[in-house]
Image 1: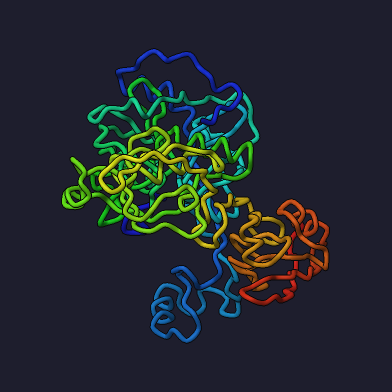
Image 2: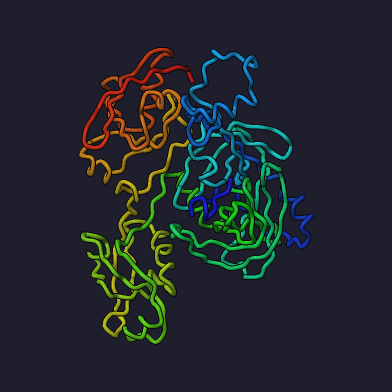
Amino acid sequence: MIKTFIASFAFLFAGLAHAAPTPVVDVADLVEKEGPAVVNISTTTLIPHGVKGMPFPMPGDDEMFDFFRKFFPPGSGNPQQPMPKEVPAHSAGSGFIVSSDGYILTNAHVVDGADEVEVKLIDKRKFTAKVVGSDERTDVALIKIKANKLPVVNMGDPNRLRVGEAVVAIGSPFGFENSVTSGIVSAKGRSLPDENYVPFIQTDVAINPGNSGGPLFNMKGEVVGINSQIYSRSGGYQGVSFAIPIDVAMDVAEQIKTVGKVSRGWLGVAIQEVTADLAESFGLSRPAGALISQVQDDSPAQKGGLQVSDIILRFDGKPVENSGDLPRVVGAIKPGSKVPVQVWRKGALKELTVALGAMPNEDNGGPTSVKSGKASKGGLILSELSAEQKKALDVSSGVLVEGSSGDALRAGIREGDVILAVNNASVKSVDEFRRLIQDVPKGKSAAILIRRGEGTIYIPLKISSDE
């Protein structure tokens, strides 16, 4: 389960501190030492019958029925047997243990929307995992299993990686568990389309579906990245793979674990690359920085005095060589921080100070939310509403539906709905919704007040299971 361009284009846990490991130069030694901390992740998602390419012909599809009759002729089964309303879809990925009490890092796209997540260790033990939270912007998820005294990986510094340095990946490509591949670092700090907040590590390590979420090791046996994406015209490995630097991933995991959400700094500008021609026209000695093409109204940038045609050369003391550097630098800073900004304006350097805001959510105008991961009783994956979202919706409380399956899907509750109340009891948080829905017995219905678009509607949610 690996993201491809054709498909879509520091957190320190207790006990994580280790002495610097003895350098390892042999891949076999590295795998023998670090392999036990790498896990296989299997997910199960209930898919409504007949959608997303599930191989069940819909009534009226004569050609498909003819095709299926060749393999399931009359009399081979019960023709009166009703088709299931939902069918399980299985997928696989990888992960690695970052604390001995069961916290595991993987990719968000490995576990997003899953109804069940199973973790298998190298010693064949299996555990059902809880999704603590996930962050789509960085494609990082933190999951937890109930176990102790587990082997853990050692963390490295991806900033010290050199292009050409040897690296090793361990994962489960195509379900082949604990597979090892090796290669070199091809480039650092890569910006990918729609992935502005991660300075990807590019490698030529063979990565395929199922490697997602697995570790990328340097030759000291330290994790330097999480294998996440490949460039491919076929869906398989073609020599260009990308990993999320481990310092970025651990910072996200720390926020998920301790705060329950991921916050990023927000500036409020549209930028473009400074070409050689633009540099000459603006009087710069060389092409560098991020050229501001738009400043949003009432944004931190506007309040801080930034203007259209300014070229940002340094932000919070860090050089901005390319426009792609700026979103990563800004996003890594805590909202509310006051940071120095150096700009090139009308042929001269100018120093400004900007107080950053919180990163708006691309879909609904509020800060990035962290999904609750595991579906609640009734089949809903929910997240908290931010203050900005409440203001935009003109509501004082409620929770956002991030995913719908099972009972909720059958009832007609869908992603993007806002749940305001359960049986006339106002819902102020995800935990409160879980408590209210838990009181609804199997076979009974709860009246769910939904905000959808500009209106509200009650939807009866019938509970079919005590789980």
